[in-house]
Amino acid sequence: MTVRMTAPMAARVSRLFLLLARFVTVRRARVPDRPSHGDPVATERLRIASELHDVVAHDLSVMTLGVGAGRVIMDKDPERARQTFREAEESGRQVLTDLKRMVALLRVDGMARGPQPRLDEMDRLLDGFRARGMVVSFAEEGARGTGSTLELSAYRIVEEALGNAVRYGRAREGSVTLRWFPAILEVVVQDDGLPRDRLVGTWERAALFGGSVSAHARPGGFEVRVRLIRPS
Figure 1 (cartoon, rainbow, N blue to C red):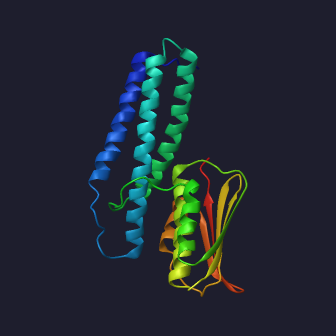
Figure 2: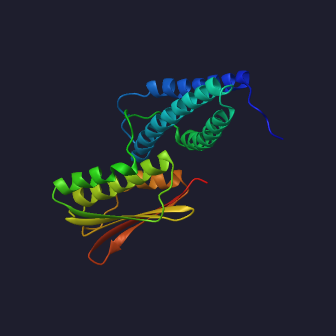
């Protein structure tokens, strides 16, 4: 059965998305400036939850604008309005998935503010390590998928792995590889540094996507391999 969205229905949907966006924004505003000291796992969950707040709030705002625009043009351009609502529906599914992850993770409030990085900013991240004297190469295989939280998690995993390589492994060279499979994103970070065991954030992000982490010494250095289940 096909349900035609009337103007009043669209208005109610728009208000619903606006209320959700406000809820996330208000909850985000209650986050303290600094985390409490304690368990490092809890601290990482604080930071990840805060980042998810930012992503979801942004996506909800975009959805609200889209539904509002569809409502305005519904009578003048029904086909364009239907396309707008279809796009909002797809965005809604992604937001609901992200909200479920956030609720599962949010046992405590988080911190950090501002726009969160995407994979398009990977070069800037690697340039930062290069400026510190590290030689880093980057490769990406397969068709890049979509999903703000997935991209954010991959970015942060690379950031933590390289940061630990420099700080604790005294690495001078490294490589980053992203491999996109139909259902999985694999993140591989290799370096010529010493073995170490400091991947709290990486483990938490992998768990968020039902993934796995492998961190071990290899001939001539160290490797971190993370698999994240891509949202369907």
